[in-house]
Length: 295
Image 1: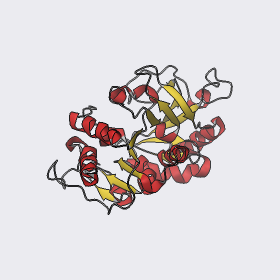
Image 2: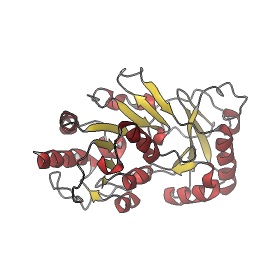
Image 3: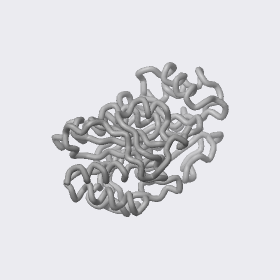
Image 4: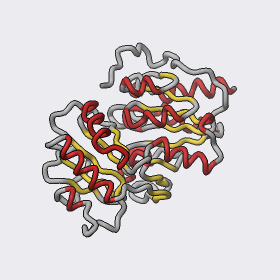
């Protein structure tokens, strides 16, 4: 899924589109993009982000991670304290530090839509198991594998977890996770999109057959567009980075975009440029070149 074979050097210049509009905002994915495979942020990347903000370019982290998994970058926010989490389902202020993140905006998945998605996908792909991601809680079916960094609060069938009568009904659902133990990841994504249709947005960011299902029209791109509109920033003034299918819409929307050297083929096709792999600090490489051109 992440082939780095074509990337020969961490210092090789990225394939870049012609610069036209000066950038005002950098939107970067985390896993497989800004973060190295060991989930660290390299000193070079930290310095590049700080230099971008010092030059007046705002930075947004845009990730499929929930807010409670943002500790990995909380120590490096500098001025860039806002993050788009859950593939666009939430905008979170990171300035409070680990464990004190504040939700600025929530774009929830309606429980009826979630129940419809579960039903339709069960019919289309028997053997699918589910987890439910909420603003503060994580619940799952008993057969859902241990794929994440935490223990579920509740074990129950998805239909019970999503019921309007559930005792978690007062907490917004950000997305549901659907896992299949046998299907090819891309085939599972295509099947799910056909089965669910417009009832929800379906994407994936994992190398396994794990899908992320959000509200209709909710994506990294649509929430980033809302945040940019609030700041008077046009899409031409945005540079975006990503590596997996959940980044495709964002990379297509941004005025300039870069697929990482380790990116999924769909991401390479969607981006207007390409940089080196995440382990080679591909985001920092582009930022450094951008700032050099401005001097």
